[in-house]
Image 1 (spheres, helix red, strand yellow):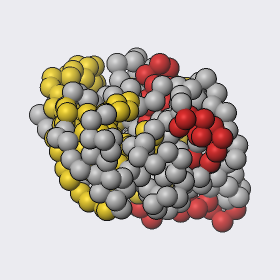
Image 2 (cartoon, one colour):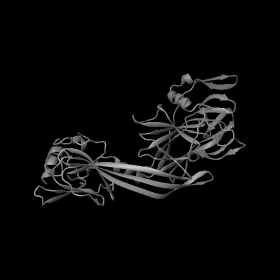
Image 3 (cartoon, one colour):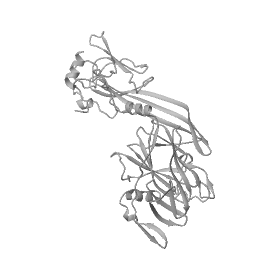
Image 4 (cartoon, one colour):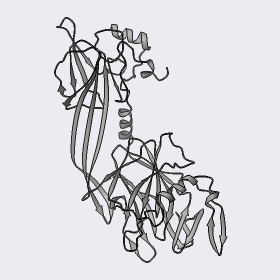
Length: 418
């Protein structure tokens, strides 16, 4: 009670719903789990062109581009015509944040439909490409707004095609592919990420005209629309910009239609041991707890399209690492279902003692510590605090450093309105 009174005197009154997990893990994971998977068509990228007609052909001036010119230039540098690439079958897995897929260019004579499949949800068709002849392109039934240099049977088109904004739980498998690929006479198999006909290309260029975080990551996906005879393997027939705020989907190699998804979460617990009430330095015990999960999936393809991703195995490992001691009282940590040996406290020492643990739940923070008092008889049990309680344990990201001895943590750790 004395500790709680002093805490509120220093930091202010605690609201009943105030929690002491200062990481964004629980909030983001709970949000993703509760909201499920969403794939929504949104406004696409804009390209502004000037046109001229020479000898009956339509041309555009690249220098006249007033928006996304840097993006266009980066694509032509990263995926030029004629440069061969080799892709491998992969699956993309969703990051913790939402991301958006923006079609940037469509090139070549093959017609197709662009699909994105997120988890077990029905595939979403982003656009349909078709032709009345080789000089007039249509996307979703509308004439293109821009055309660039018609050469033989190849045409590059730029248009305000829609983007696709995706929000899904971390690790959700994502497939991007072209279906119904044909030239009016010959048909080709479905191609995309699942069979190595799509590759990630990194670039520093970022799209203009869309909302992005300052630290947003942008990658390209280049897709080869022909995996048969006569393919040029330059992977620029369809180019997509993937914009993540800040992360984009991870690319995981698939072997024999099986792949592993590895995820890891670490929380740093900073603990007051009640040995000196009122210093609030939260460095008497600092321990990092990490859970690493490897999930193995088996996918099924039907008529060249991924129709299921079955979880066939899970391997989980947990560990705890003592990072710092700033108190002198003996203590015993319990993390999940694992009770670590009692050890002596040490004033102001950094260390790295690693223990295997089991049963830790990063959502509920099931960690506690027994602290033996100076009379060597009394023992206080300090659990992770409930909402509205004065905390003696806080959870932070492992990038947060602990405070020097007897220096209280700043108020803005707890209250962002400071």
